[in-house]
Length: 448
Image (cartoon, rainbow, N blue to C red; front, side, top):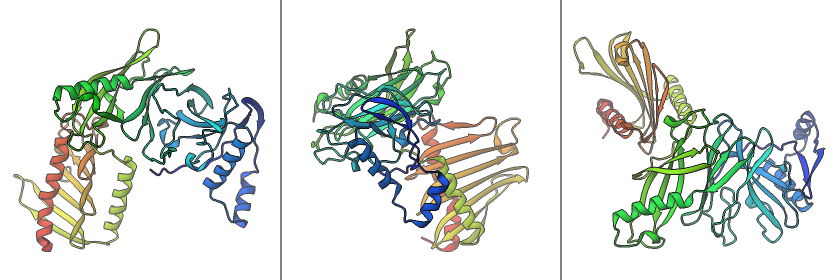
């Protein structure tokens, strides 16, 4: 798995032999570095940071890197991978942080020389909130694409963060194993300290109970190993109140290793995270829905950039344009489609149904490599089907021609979650409409 990092060396103070040192590490000015870079061929930032990471580690400093893709959306909560010599205690302060370091390319994984840990941290405050511990056999502090001593790549780490609730934040940390899950932990952060507890047994108990009900002949429930995928926060439960629970969705995949006769069982767990009067957090499985989760959607900005690129190509005349009038959908209404075609394959299409300029619906379809990737619908007047709303839009994004994201605007902006009623049916409808509406274009160009 490859991640794009911002390669920045933070001007943090060193932590030497487990003690804080108020001496900040000051480098040359940015202007000097920029001038120097114009003269001397630059060493890749990744290599520079890796060398500096290894040098400081060998000299007795506690060093770290931020697991960048796994920080909260507001940039406040995150996880550090730290490393120090075996004979040193963990620093009470902030370690020397190098961003963008691939741990697998450093000396840190050498267990005979170094101690490595994961810490839940407040990034703006540069403060350690809680050490990630686990009683599960074989648990180690890992990093995405981390390579184990056995040479097996398949372990990984993901995090899911909830919204801030009066200074408190929930989080889930999922440590994958080659088969199943090494551990999955609940973070209960009150802003001062993060309490981190395993909820693997809770989730696994629910999944194994679900498997037992199926009465599978090929294997017993205990023979299945279960892996998890953090799918997201249930936005319907999001609240800023500290006493309010938070709903999250966790995907699971249960299989019997090396047993091809036993079925693979996939599903989605609905999990409620809540605190009691004393602030102690717990996790409860409130429901199980069988079936593979929808493909994970890339960021909405990726789809927006794709539509912008295709619109620009259409406007520049890069593709052949074909227009077809359609039969009237009703009295006083007209309809037509316009398609942009390259190599007899539709790249973009506009479908218009109109009563007049103030009452119409315009739908744009975008294909990539022959697959519907996105659709944007603009409604005006009576076509909004919302009283007192003059304009509304619908944006649909697809992965492998399955709807993964749906954004509605009009009387209020709303993102429809994949597990909400009607989501999958709407995706199928959009796909069917794109096929039906594109038929006149393909007939006009004589394509099969």
